[in-house]
Length: 143
Length: 403
Image 1 (tube, each protein chain N blue to C red):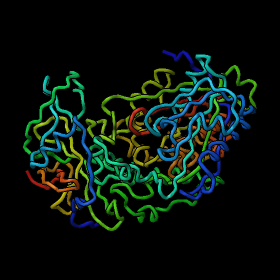
Image 2 (cartoon, each protein chain N blue to C red):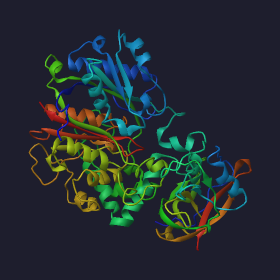
Image 3 (cartoon, rainbow over the protein chains, first blue to last red):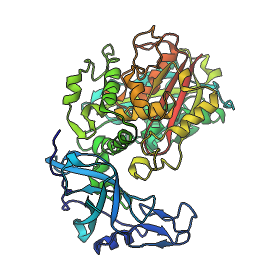
Image 4 (cartoon, rainbow over the protein chains, first blue to last red):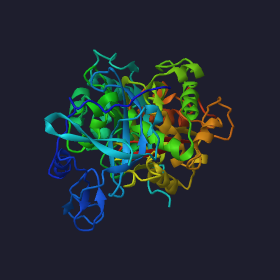
């Protein structure tokens, strides 16, 4: 099977919403800064951000700037634009985030042929503008 | 420690509508189909629908996340005079095998006498389960998943299947064998959607929907309704059919699986699993049995790869050995006299081949196997396992025993 170039999904049509627990993540993304929710009490990381730390139940949160790199944990290869059904090769990835042990982002991978994607690859964050002036973290190969 | 309610309740009636390809059930309505299944289940049990006084649902009583029915509308529609128990397992299709356990809770608490569990599914063009995650409105939580383009359950599970392949060397040949082995069980089933034997060529030519899973690894998209009636074993003596005793039943799961594929934060080895280990362990603790004691296994097969992972989580084979177990022919039903090494899986064809009513057909097949009336009867079947999920927690499992 030869899929060819993997592309991030077009930002047009991608919508997100936030709540008080998640908004700092998305505000940081607007500044092209990758963060993750860290417990302000015990330091445990959790993603997606939630109200309580599952380790110590604290509601205190910190939003440290992460290196913006990660490791590819798993992925799929899809061939249709989910909005239009038109042919469109994209690679949904699950990424282990460097600097925030145990946390993952589910995103898209670009800058590579889908056929060449491998679990364990080092990845670097990129930024994709989406609806509502938000910015979505996506990833490309390389550390 | 033997479960305190072991064999004290039984499934005494099963009923189902015809099975329709997605959308083809219209102009029947969701309440028409749910009512039809309930009335047929009552007739099978030999009771009047007016004797039903309990409802034990799953998937939050929703009809497959799409159209909705509830206790009030079913009572009104069917003329049920009183209800004294109405409860639902939370989360989604993972609750199908556990819902009769909820009925046991109501019956053993003497809240009710005859409990119905029903699922009806109708996927009209504006309501398609296969793209439910992509089509739902953005919220704070799914904003961390939806933009990736993982639009449906199968897309999410393809990522889990990939990790399993990476960790254990699992191959697509095993997924093919799961689809083929269970397809081989539908040729003689009048209501099955897919009846033709599946060739290698057809499988390999099936379009990839979310690599590594192709269309034939995805379950069918179908409409229809299925209902079962549960009562006490004592009361079952007055029913028409031999009771299918509820020998063990459990729902739940561990935090490591948690929100599962709607979250993707599961650590290894839970990520590359069906999330069923906790429920499996509870079933075996309740009974002192193991997977090898089962005569037939009706494993929730919304996606072929998740059958393989359940075989591991329930202990039919060791973790990481699902590929070789499946390819060794161990899930095949070879006829009533089968005495091979494995336990036949999805003798009814399952969600992949017969139809998909969010797992209820697995419960029905388990009942028919221990009654001895299954179309593909396992000879002298005494114990049948049915499962619900993988899905977000809770998932569930049920062991029925021949009376």
